[in-house]
Image 1 (cartoon, rainbow, N blue to C red):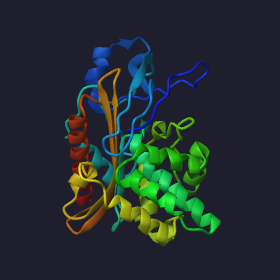
Image 2 (cartoon, rainbow, N blue to C red):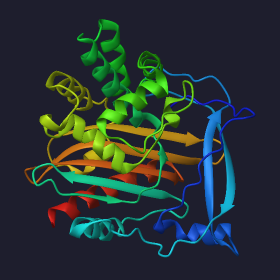
Image 3 (cartoon, rainbow, N blue to C red):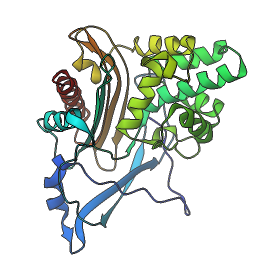
Image 4 (cartoon, helix red, strand yellow):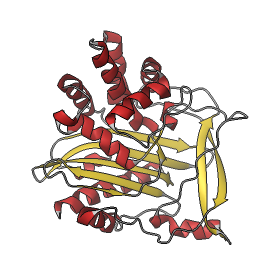
Length: 322
């Protein structure tokens, strides 16, 4: 969940994003033009005051949607970018039930073998998964300043990650310098397709599954490849391993033993559709996997969670066959 605002004159327009291959049925319903397939763009904006305490956070939002014709893609299916892992992921995720009108993107890495794969390259609103990025940015800034986090920063960090508390996220978003501070940290982390939300709208940050996998590698991957020192990595890992009861769904479904994660969920009151995202680390068959699953256009939170969990399982299964 995250705060929104009403759109003001002069605001930049939402970026058009193509629907995934599993949503072809929705394209037929929306129609097509002579120039190609119809795409949909939607963005949530604030229509009221955010009420937030913890997992029971509530928000009121409206959604603007526009339909824009673009050139039709040559194939409805994502094309594997490289190697067998991508092809296997495409095949595995292709078996996941996706509602008409929903979009899905997945990225996965086997930390032992280094094999990775990505399904889909569209941009999605982060909702609350950006909170892991906010904390990583704060920790990086603290490292640069040669200091530890303050007691207040640790209180905010714990509530933001464990309970997904929005007020704490807003406080730390301001502390890192909002979108600019996030961008500066992400440039060092290697996130090239993540753009911070305007003003205090951290939840409207745009990201890709591939970028989220890159961030996970900073936290859970090889220490020598990370901008974060071991104390920072251990601190963030510890919070993601201690998610509040009721928020431990998502990529954790692909694991058999331990997991660490951050989830994001957003109901769009104007459409009744949900954004459901989950990123984190899971352990299965004695191996460790980093998994990022992004989705939008889900009819309910339950449907979205079911799809995200099925996609996470499919992603891990795909890499076990490589």
